[in-house]
Length: 460
Image 1 (spheres, rainbow, N blue to C red):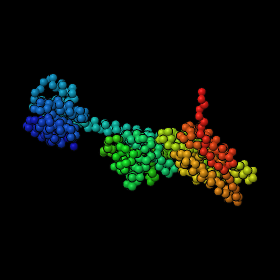
Image 2: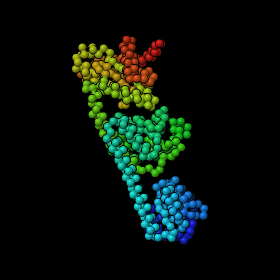
Image 3: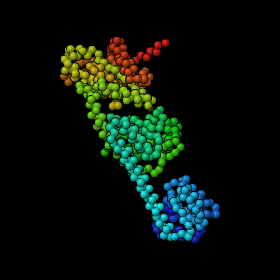
Image 4: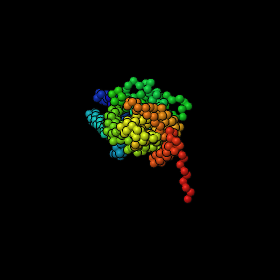
């Protein structure tokens, strides 16, 4: 029901205005003074204000200014018994919708009020239509995008704007694990810890719906959560499969705006689910170009793609990346002694061992021949050392060719380099890991070596 405020210090006209408006079904508040009106205007929402121009304490023009300052869309009808052309023009120029002279014509008054309300409804409907049109356009942009990184960014921007915040984290499923892919307005050094804290709390409250809201959930001494008092977890699901979690947090010094338009959020999340599914299918088809037919691992073409992507993530989030080069020692003897068919099966078996020795988020690549490359995400020097030694030991202890009644023993030489500790570019990283591998070969094979420090630039 539309709410109208009557501001009139004459009790007779207060009753006349109130009776007429209530007969037409409006909700009416009454102020007998300008000061009372100013208090009501600041504490309640009105669609229309009818005010006398001349009152004992506050001018009707002051009421007009106060209303327009709070909400320019609210209509104001000025009423006075002391009319002159100058005041009427001044009121209309300053935003008054109409100007009536006492004694008023009842039908004219009711018609003007009805006209104001009709225009207000049309304006509200237009604004709603514009909002829905914008929402549809945003959702179409998301749904039509086939690049996963771009989908992540578009979804984060759309959801944060819809909720009314500027900070958030985007976790998306990567080989069955939730991985941080998008950070908005949060210190990258704190992003991972904050995200883990929010998601672990949300998991306790997740009932399979689309939204969970947390309040005052972080320890007081959590440096990574400075200024974070509220968080909202938005779940992207395809049927029963979790595709991602968008974590939105309050802006500094502000709560998350209420109320939340759950209908709009659900619509965006549905479009996001469709976009992620389409992009995953597209990327699966595209990945076939990067698959080595013999081993089922990625091929050398994929190395450039994954390194470029992961180095950008390192730079953006301040994380680490390691590249491991591996060469099978004396593999030519396998082909010479058992034939190329057995040699191919051994290469596949090596690939299987390598895949089992790393995480799902890491990329195992057959670089060519009997050489392999492994890209270890979010892994520094110590982590790469552990993985390299584990792989060396697994290969050494494994017996190959058992399915063919053989007992072939192999060793490998490995080298690894890390970003940003050892190198900052793709070319430097690959070259240093390759050189470290050949150091292992030269040192007697079956060894894992970290790259040597890059030489200082020559003095001019």
